[in-house]
Image 1 (cartoon, rainbow, N blue to C red):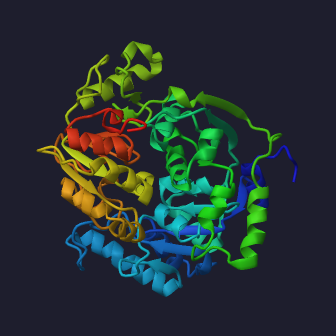
Image 2 (cartoon, rainbow, N blue to C red):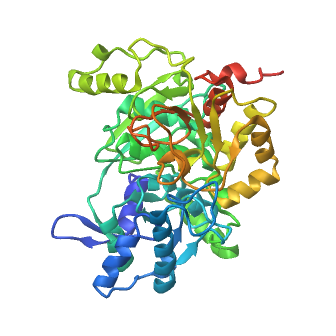
Length: 473
């Protein structure tokens, strides 16, 4: 392989089946992840055409979007949810696909389950009918969210027809300050580049900040690549990646693992790798961050004021005013001190064990503020078990948080967990679009799990650094 090739282009070329008359690449997909919402129609398409799943051993299913997180007794109270659940059970049984269902012990959000089972590995091409499939790029794979018709296409051919994106290297170097987490880093990047800034690009996240991150932190960053418009995002595999995968159920074992390790590390972009664009940011300039608007790019550092409408390019000003009106906020206003009604810790962005540890550390010995509904939803059954073994669940419940079963929950409210009316939610999820959390008029403030916990305890948006132990204390 040429030293000038970045990881993205190495993996793309290795998986290219051919070039279609349209100019698109027919790309082999190494791993296909499916869930209950975008797969029923896809399986129906296969039945209509009398097709089979080409590689059922490369396809794995879980249930997450519609799953209730309080009462999971079957049949579900929501008839549509029950129909989706029954459909994926029937489809997986008939087409020979492995399903991590509610009784399996491995069920959870699709982007949590893939990595924790060792299905997600460097150098893979991964597809899933979900926008946040970019999460898996944290392992040095290239992972795409796809639509329902594409799910059917991958099921029947194990390939996708795609245009090759350009590659932008996004560097963050230096030291993150106390109380600044992976969520703050990606919100900062999206704010700088814009929610459409990544259109036509794959993002390679590079620099010593990402080098020092755990795999779970890297997943948080890559998860939100799509919120910046990028087709996918990834981080080069290193020993941190290797050690995360080692020993997981679907990872190679023994000698095969060591061979895989050597190949995985060889895929990383080298010092002479070329990119179509490069940007870089100073880690020290990133504060705990909170969104004020109706897209993830509309955010500020906790000690900044909401920007003036006039400070935006003219073509964006109408949208900025719309966001301020919807949120009932004003330019120049501080987010600090804004009252909240709901606090949500969970989602494929921030529902992993390290997120819950971070939140529990702040919750310990404190109480959720009167009038605030606070829920913690683990990303998977495995995360839930681990949190209970470590005593985190007990800390949350003693502090007044509700401790739930695994699922997508209030991230997208395709289940009973929804905002009501004009409620304001401090949320560790990934989207703050109008109506995203179930109420057409509900308002979402995106932030790190630590910031959500601080807001839950104080009852308002808070600089989490005020609640952290001083160094040396």
